[in-house]
Length: 291
Image 1 (tube, rainbow, N blue to C red):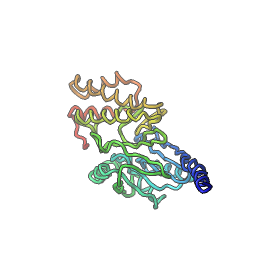
Image 2 (cartoon, rainbow, N blue to C red):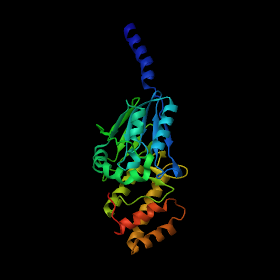
Image 3 (cartoon, rainbow, N blue to C red):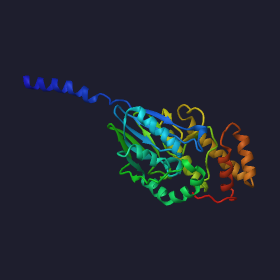
Image 4 (cartoon, one colour):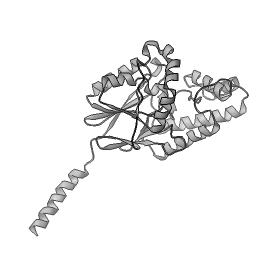
């Protein structure tokens, strides 16, 4: 009887300790805004001791600023995850790797495949434009095994890999109810559509956005944005509304000029008209663009 009582007491003491929540994670966002060619987001996810970086910036100077931000956090960078295959997500990897050589650099299999197929061509195009801010060397991430990362025992889930567009996935942090990474959400700017050249690819994009909404996130950090990060899922709603508007206007207009004018009239407050101009030319078949 005494032994059973002691065992019960032991479990009563141990269970609350085991059930205590892990130290909460936190998100720090780096976005160079108007200072850079692309206002692309990187997120530093931090725990009590360690950190995971989502995306590595485009320009060397921004990657270096990101390095300083990581060092200032006082956390050990264990992993760098590249969430998309566009060069503004991974060109800064050589700077990050030089500063944190022990950090693993990974991406999903579709992302690694796309980077490997296009990285030399992207460097040939962007190198002369970036000049001193171009990467000194290209770093190809390793393929992530599985569908999640782990930070101090807490999962960072890669969502969308089994969806209609696995090359356009994103990161879901359940403990924070936060969505970060990826290229599917924008805010404050004309949405880049040149890489989704078929109506089906844009419908797949809308389906991915519905998947984000279904998670009921508290926070969504757009992959590209200018201005403040909108509350809740407002950036998701904006991106979906923009895509639907673009689709409608593309069907009505005869050429890129008509499409550009229609979208600027519908969305006069948005920055980065160059994204709209190029996207309109590509979708209207007036310009070739590798996707």
